[in-house]
Amino acid sequence: MAQYRVHTHGIIESIKDYLQDFHAYKDVFLRFRASKAVKAAAKEASRDLREEHSQLLTSDKPQGKISSKRRKLTQELRLETEELVHNFLTTRANYNFSKMHLISHFIDQISKYGSLPQYATKIYEASHKPFKDVY
Image (cartoon, rainbow, N blue to C red):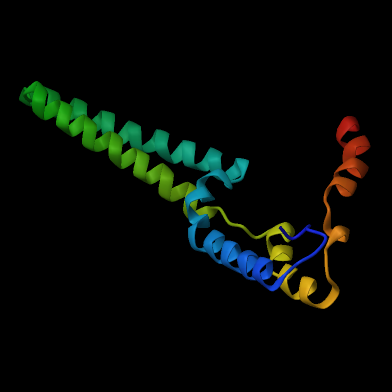
């Protein structure tokens, strides 16, 4: 909507609403914003926790736990591991990059200057192609 050639008051209000909604619910996507280092650290923490769990399960083995209790314990430990990884990924990820900040200024820019063709990313993506090919 920000790249429309003409913006009415209703369109600007819609952009504001969409931006507010995005910021209200963006935490859902945080786990997908984690860097490679954070993902590797989460994987290592998960592995360490699974090792602790396996020690806990094997230490209870001589006591002859009933299989249903053992399954329940295994399920609880699996959920604990999933929660650890989810918390690890979401607390260490962020939306702190320039494109996200730039969006917050669109409404003021549209109000002052009209449409925003200068913010089209196709131009910049095309200029990065030779560097991507070399890399």
